[in-house]
Image (tube, rainbow, N blue to C red; front, side, top):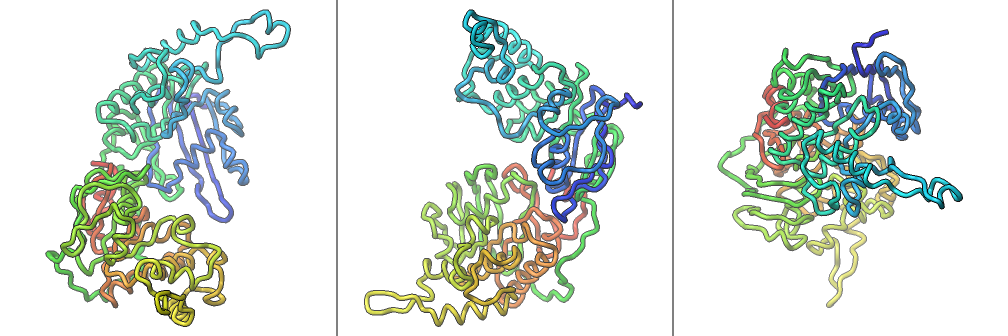
Length: 525
């Protein structure tokens, strides 16, 4: 029996339907060790932690293969309650606190200390009274352990974000018998000084023989606080390394390092792009998109280019497109062909020649119960009165023009369907995405912004969508901005790639730059 490790996950394999998201993955964490779990978005980190914590999403979808051991003993974790019984806790990135409760009440919720009363002796345990003094004593001890000097009787509502994160940690270490803590991007919402304090708190916790799994994209934090790390890539185990024996560049290479498989053939590229001919200019651009805040972006889009915008989830790249389209409150300036756009008015970007394909094609991009042809012309009808006939002072839907245009788009974009009247909801994901593109093109835009163009579609459909964007750029000279979490697709089709980290442009790279350069920028270094 191996007792060197607090946690061993061996041969972990997980399928969702026919999609394998983890393939023979391994994770080993020593006792009292701070161990980083590293990987790009989609590498499998969340799925692996869901397995460790016994989340229902795993067991409701066929379970998993492999073995889990805690302190050398094989265990079966089929629910979060079982994980808690084994001493496994999780500090979530999204706070699980109750604003109307005090610090003590939040730390002790679900584990309240009670004392018997006369009524409880007659009617049962539920009528026992709270032993607030004992609860406050426990809360104070947990807060002192992590160095948080706040009153345990204060209400949580209205506290700074940093305090809330520390209260989450205090709640976990207050649990009896805690042996392993999972920190899921705990510094993502913290200031630099708060993050430093949290790293110090992690060291204090580990010194008490509590093991920590630290999930973060910030390589400087990993190098600063961890003992070792495991790297996943595309659902597979890349390796386990000791932090002292590696460098940020090596870690970035391990995370990103795969052969770049070009999804689009650009070998016959003949375009010339004038670097000084800037079509779209963003200056100190800020966007208040929840979860994707943009915090002062300066970026130029050159006429006739394909500009890729990449970065990890939650770093702000998605907010750029939504902000330009006026979907969220913005600050700073957006200038198109020398004209500053008033983004406070919804539809300004569309009226000035910017087409947009949303990452949320079902929630924002499509009318699922309506026909293909109606979806294609919908925006053009609203924005520039396209596909409408004048009848005196009224306008009427032009069915003939709509049908002709829809049939043309179905043919040119290779939309696989039974015809223009088929409901969009009946199409495959890839064909729905093509309808989104067709709707944007019906506006005859001079600039097309496409957000997460291949999300949720298979590899064949991905190639078709990317080839379509490359074709529009090459044959029609359309300027295209592709915002994507899939670095490989950006490197396949873009002329330049801007990496967004913590709401700002970390740098702009060539598609042929090294994996390490991409990894370092995406990790904030």
